Structures are given as structure tokens and as C-alpha cells.
Length: 321
Image: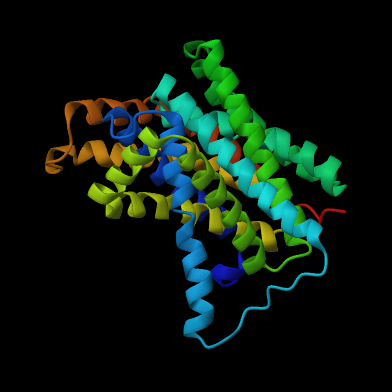
């Protein structure tokens, strides 16, 4: 069995698990009114991109090894930075959807449509073509997602669908652009420029509005450690996903594996609800927000079975060409 760091599939599934944790916590932040609007939540997320940057810089100093930041071709640097901006936009539109309908399950099910957009962008930007059996896997994964969306989409307003489409397109572009950058940059460089762009976008928007800046700084002073813990979940998901992309045969296959995210959200929500009486900090409002995530387990089981079938089928295919 390959080591964890060499198994792109395990890394992609771990990324989905961390994203699920992050989504459930975001539901609580929105439901409890801790974050007031989508832009505020996105800026806070972006500011904590300083964490992986800190690890990269301090790590090189602590090990007394200098990191070679010289890159002869500027295009991969710009591409990794653009991927970070696209991820920032994904977070913004995702928060817009959460503030409209505080259901992370809906948002992340919709975001799993990356399995539709990633192959399209990968074909256009990377010239990637897959073995025919991979398209069978994509079809199974897409059927699993549509099984979940069939009942959910009727509950969404047109504006929510627009936010979610913008979110999924931004996420798909971020994945493919970073996959392109990883062809020319090592993992450390790619993460550095990706995270730097996300941090720069957050700082720029923070500087534009004094009232927003004072509120966010006040929040970080009061519960900064909590925010750091929350954002570490999202950062871990991003880093695991990018590491998976760097060693996977195709970014499209990573997108298929990460379709398991809704079942993680449902399982984590059910786990929370089963022990909610033990959480003294849990309010009725928070309980109701999380209860939504655990609904429709029967449909989700059918969906995850299709997605699991897609992952099995992927292993039958040859390398992309």
C-alpha cells in the first residue's frame, strides 16, 4: 500500500473531509451571526492564508535550508497567483449562498459540479484528454451529484443558483490553473504564490473600508485563536487538494474523488447532533442550522454509492494522454 503522501486518492478524500469540517463550522458562524456578511467572511478566510506562508518561510529558516525562489518563467507564478484569486472568489460566492440559504450541504453539493467544469477547463487550458473509461467515472459521479441536486435545486432561488454557479466555476478554474502551475513549479512554490495572492486580495479589500476593517480586527482580537483553528481546516483542505493534484494522473480525477464531500458533511453533522446535549455552547439556532445538513440521508447514500463507483472505475483506466 503506498504511503499516505504518495496516494493522491487518500489525499483527495482527506481534503474532502477537512472541507466538510470547515463547511459545518461556517454554517455555525453564519447561523450565529458571528460573521455579518459574505465579504467579511471571505476577507477573514483570506487573511489567514498567512498561516501556510508562515510555515513555508519559517520552515526554511528552522531547517537552515534556503529556499530557491528564482523561477525563470514568470507565467507559472502568475498562474498560481490567479488560481489563488479564483479560490478567493469561490469563497466569496460560497458565503453569499450560505447567507441566502444557510445550508452547507446544498452549497457543497453544487460545488461538486467541478466534475463537469474541471474536465472542460482542463481540455481547453491543459489540452488534457482522458482514457474513455474515465468519462464513465465522470458520468457516474455526475449522476451521484444530480441525484442530490434533484430535490435540493427546487428549494433554491434563482439568485442562490447564480451564486453557486459562480462558486463552482471559480473553484474549477482554481483547480485547473493550479494544476497548470504545478507542471512548472514545485509544490512549495505553487502553494506560496497561491496563498500570497489570496492574502493580498484580503488585505486590499480590508484597506478599502475603515468600518469593516475595525470590525474584523476587533473580531480577530477577541476570537482570533478560534478563527485560526477554523481557517486551518480550510487551509489543510486546500493544501491536501493541491498536493493530491501535484501527484495525481489528472486534476479531473481529483475533482471526482472530492465529490465525497457531501457525505462527510452529513456524517459530521449527524455526529454533532447525536452528542449535541454535551455541547454547552450549542444554541438552538446552531442546532437547527446543523440539523439541515443531516437531512436526506437515504438520497445521499444512493449518491455516494454512485460516486464510490466512479472512484472504483477510475482505477480501471489508463493514464491520461
